[in-house]
Amino acid sequence: MELENGFTPIKELIYSIRTLKNYLTTIKLHKLNIDVCGVKTDSIIVKKKFKNVVLKMFDFSDKIGCFKLEIHHGLPGELINKIKLNDIIVDKLDPIVHNISDEYDKNEINNVIVKHNIAILGALPGVGKTTTSINYKCNKKLFISPYNKLCQELHRKKFDAITLHMLLGYGHNNDVNTKMKSI
Image (cartoon, rainbow, N blue to C red; front, side, top):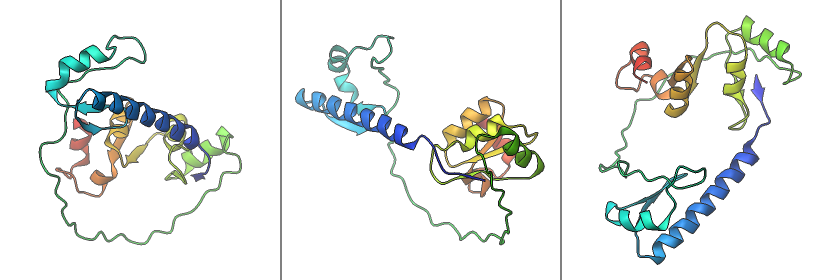
């Protein structure tokens, strides 16, 4: 089953607004001769020596929309090395595609999910693959995600989840059950 519609334009707008806010904050910091070490999606990293200046510049109260100061985070201190992995040989699979005529018909989707082992694919990020899986009745679900953060969120909600990296056996420990307990 492949979902084709989602909230990608809204997500992109939110990220664009956040990027603009980061840019304006970076300009403000540069005007005060504060070096910016890094910019993440929702944070700007500066050196600890500028802590007192930054504390005076921004509102760090607990109100919504205010800044948050974290001094225990930083940039990685080690270089990231690439390693060549052996090619992965996968047997040819002949999947059966189950087309859903009405993506809002919960009964139709539930019938496919309950009767078959399925993989839910989406043409774009944010189309509802995880939400669809969580909302429908199925005794055994294994979520395979490229992102560890999504796996952690699903695990907190009592779902089994592993990263694609672990599924393919490239983790520190190939025992999936052991790895699941440590997420």
